[in-house]
Length: 382
Ligand code: PMP
Ligand code: GLN
Image (cartoon, rainbow, N blue to C red; front, side):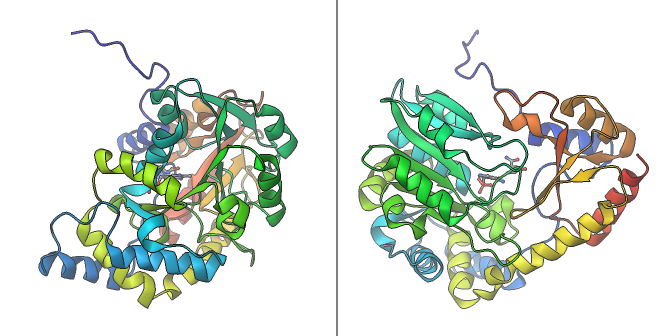
C-alpha cells in the first residue's frame, strides 16, 4: 500500500530523536523538557485513592466538574478574570490536545495563522491538517521579544488566529503587560482569534507576574487560553491540560474535543481537583523552586565556554556555543551527545528558517542537583 502523506514536512519530533540519542549514548538528558522528580506526594496519593474508590469510568466530556471549578477559581484569583466553570473550561489530554482542538475548531481551508518563531512544534502540523497556512513572524533573535509592528504587518484578510506563548519555549522570554496591550490593539475591530499557550504560567522568575491574556478583558473575549498540569505538578506523563475560552468559542472547541478523545483520564482529574484548591502553595511556590534550579545550573555553567542567555520563565536555559564550535546546531547536538554525553535541543528545530549563524541550543534544568552537576562537569571539559 502506498499512502500520500498529509504531513510531508513532518518527521519524528526533535524531542523524541534527542531522547533516543541520549538513551543510546547513556548521556545525561537535558534535551526533552520534563522534570526528573515527582509531583507532590498528596497528588499521587489522591490518584491512587481515586482509582481505589471507583473513579475509573468516563468523566464528563468537558471535564470533572470539581476540577473545572478549581481551574475557574484559579483564573479569577490569579488573573482577575471571571470564568464560568461549566461553560468556559474544558479539560483535555494535555495542552497538545487543547492546541489541536482549538486550531481544528477555527481554521478553515486557506485561513492564515500567525505564529512567532521560534515556536513550539505542534502548532504548524495542526494548522496544516486543517488546510490552513502558517505565517511565521520572527521574534527578536537577541532577546526573543515580539515586534508587534511586524505581527501587524503580517495580518491579512485571511488571518484567522495568532498563536502566542508566554513564558516562551524555548527561550524563556515572558510577556509584559505592554505586550498584552499591543496584541489587544492589533486585534481590535477584527475577527482574529488568539490561541495563548500558557503551559509554563506558574514558572515566572524574579518576582514578575505571569501576563496571562486572561488579565486583559478584550483579549480574554477572543482567546483560547491553554495550560497543562504536566508542567505545574511535575507530571508530564499524565497528560492533563485545559482550555479556558468564552462560551461561544468553547462550544466549538468542545465539538472537536468530544470526537478527539471525548474525555480525559478520570482518576488524574479527580486527584488534581483535590490538590489544586487545597494546596495552592504548590503552584505559588513553583517560581521560587525553579528559580533556585535556574541559579544552580547557571552557576555550574558560568565557568564553561557557553554563553548563557537570560531566563525569565519556564525551565529552559539557552546557551550560545559559538566559542566552542562553528557546527550548525543539529550537528553540534549530535556531537555533544556522543562526545560529551549530554543531550540538548537545537534551537533551529523551532524555526521555519532560523537566523543565519545562530549558534544556540536549549538545556532543560528541571533536573536533580546530581544530574545538573554531572552535566556541567561534562560541559566544562569543552
Ligand atoms: N506548549 C508548550 C510550549 C510546551 O512546551 C508543551 C510541552 N512541553 C506543550 C505545549 C504540550 O503540553 P502537554 O504535555 O500538556 O501536552
Ligand atoms: N514540551 C517538551 C519540550 O519542549 C517536549 C514534549 C514532547 O516531547 N512532545 O521539550
